[in-house]
Image (cartoon, rainbow, N blue to C red):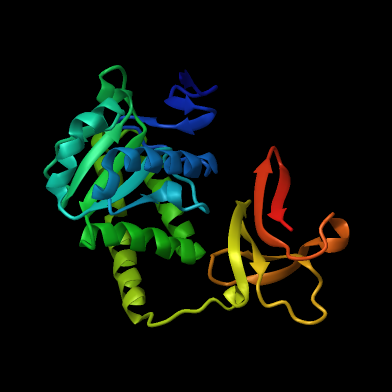
Length: 289
């Protein structure tokens, strides 16, 4: 449904209680909502159903994929294909599902589809951008490198957030968001260059917490990642149950102790495959035992 936020004349779309979408030409940032990732995954499943094996990879990219920063509530998805022309085979199915082809000449080697009432001809909202890129091409790699670098480097992510906030404040109404994009250009290019260098120089990386663990499940909550897993290397004296590890960047992890002990459970041994979910501020752990 479409509504107006109290105290603001900005129109937005609330889908299944997820605040998503902006008026075309509007630049405004919002605190990260965990539901954006759920919406992204739902969108990815819909695209996979339509495109099948033509889509070699589909990923959530853009600022809504970086959990630690504010973002425009527009979901960006990158779809990797072998040949850009292949996607037009599915143009009718994509349009019927709400993904509208957007002819543009300034996007380089990619094809753009978009969602929202602006593209339906019934309003002015933009909710999703679907970037179809060449598999192993530069543009697809840039989307991934930028997202992953800012996820690994919180200080760079906050610098990006501050820059975007300043740009949004200076030009809250920006037709086509040209000023906003131009203002980010130098930062984005610098991060992409640094990220590519880091990627090339990384010959091998082994996260030590993964030694002796299997079936990992990660929960993101208030800026911290929590990892639960099956222990496959139980040492003498280790209590049966599930240990939890925490991280702020998905690289550096700390042992936070036991999340569940056998004495607090009806199980006695072979604690496997934990899954943690949050609902209304409460956390629920399911597992095999």
